[in-house]
Length: 209
Image (cartoon, rainbow, N blue to C red; front, side):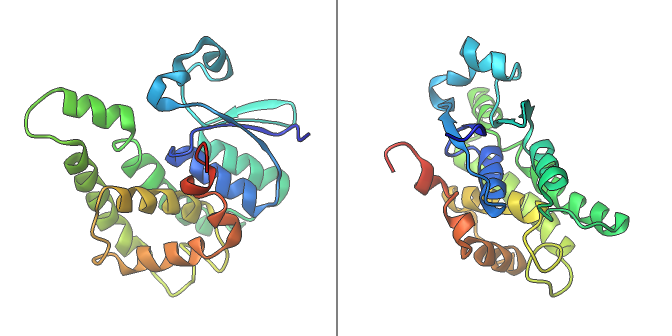
């Protein structure tokens, strides 16, 4: 049995990107589901693993790691994953692209944030909230994806690509029109064609799949 354990929720964008990363480097892991819709993240046992009450959590190398970007950078540094380039300037750009998704779009579209916004009343709906902020984020990201490289930055999947795929999954889920974002769509299609990425898809890992 593998000693690598991923505390995971099948639809979590953050967990999804870590699943992709683990698959790309061929690192076997055992998944422990944490159902965010039933409040399992607030169970004392999970809070012991992550006091923030979030997923993912990765047990690896005798460590318990939280926060998806930190986890992916750890894998990059300890498994030579190639998620970030060596050159400092290129590394900064790759990180900026990843952060444009993981720190700008995803947090405001987090389920607990969107649910709270809708609960305040007014004209906000869950679908309308998601479409607005995903579209707004993609409007900023699309022109950042300059050049003719097959992925966000370079010729192999990197940190930004691992962040982008789950966000596009959410865009499809909430009915965002991707026609204005051809570069985002093309990179995502290229990523989704990789078997390791396809294996991490929520429909492949959800309970009962």
